[in-house]
Length: 539
Image (cartoon, rainbow, N blue to C red; front, side):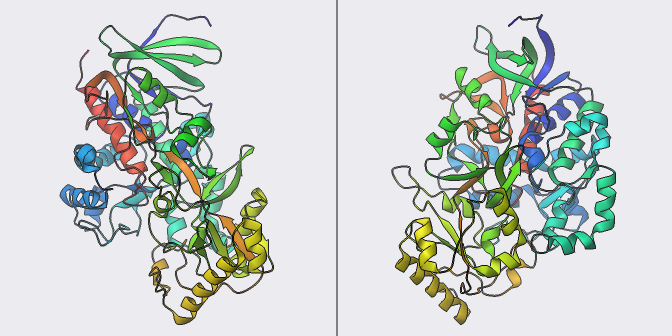
């Protein structure tokens, strides 16, 4: 490939998801020249495909709602929720996050058309110190693609219907009664269709892009960074980029930010760090670990490569592939989870169910997989999305006239599966789950109507089985960073000029979420932190 003259910029951002665009916005508003390079021809990365639930503690929205919160309480909550031993390497990052997140949110709303609103969701680990019954979960209000002109139609589409907001998904019974709910909301939905307006990740990326463009950022699509450039001291000075058959060199005076997403679409990396069955991936197929590989090549330490956003999902056809569409189908009252031996092994309503499913033994292999959701005909009536999903991947839903036949179809011992279901049915009849403490009442679904609490027997043919292994929306491992988002070597020294944010970094929260929006809120915050450090950096 020919190599034109180098292109100079203050800040080079690799990736156009929420972390990269928040960093670009903050750096540009601060007076720096910013270039954002997106590998794909569409913008927004995994963030655009997300529900954009956003976990931010002690925000101005909480204050306006009269909700008392503080960085200290949020830090106590994160510390109590974290896996054992993580504080040794992550506590400084947790402290920086709780301090910077509220500032980031105010900044983004001040310099873009994005506006967030609180949801009714509580902190899910409600018994931990610092947990709040409301005020940390929020999501963007809808925005029209026309805010970006024609570029708005280059924002990546999602597997989730963007015409509904995150708030509507939580506060209505959309998943169980999609037609009825759409009819109830039809005036606003019609207006959104006519004006190309979307909620969730669509609104998030539209708003961030509009802010970036208004602040003077340059956005390039189809531009894949293939390597980082360094000087004689090992400092990162820019990147070599391939764009539509032309190889270019970008030179960055203040720094390069890796915000290239996860590595889940690299089959070898996925199998190495997530051995065993994976059901579906819910991210762009451009997430092949480019940032992780480039960082390692210049001496970065990679960490938390076995961490990911693991979310119960159903299959959805997307751009010629079957991808994950997040739906908590396993929480129906007549559904249980069984492990590879046919035994029930967890409270199905447990938060962070993905982390539990991904439990591994001393050999690094999965303890429970393959796992299955077992249910009956009532699910087909209660949750129409199950029938709909089966059309996208006919192999996903297994049906049988008897439990014994179902067990044979999924490779389980018939007598074991029958005994497991009979034990659950007895618990449903008694109104008490003595084995795992699953709530028998209907109140657990009062806040989030996507989930149906209660215990109902599994008794009516056809009997159903659906795989419940890992559905990965994004891996969360990559270069280890300090509390300024600067990339570190294995000896703890900083690689000057190199920053990382979003799911491309060694995520300080990992698989274990502290709320439904644990990914987006921290991702944006780490992009903001990186930009603040670059603004203070001279080179």
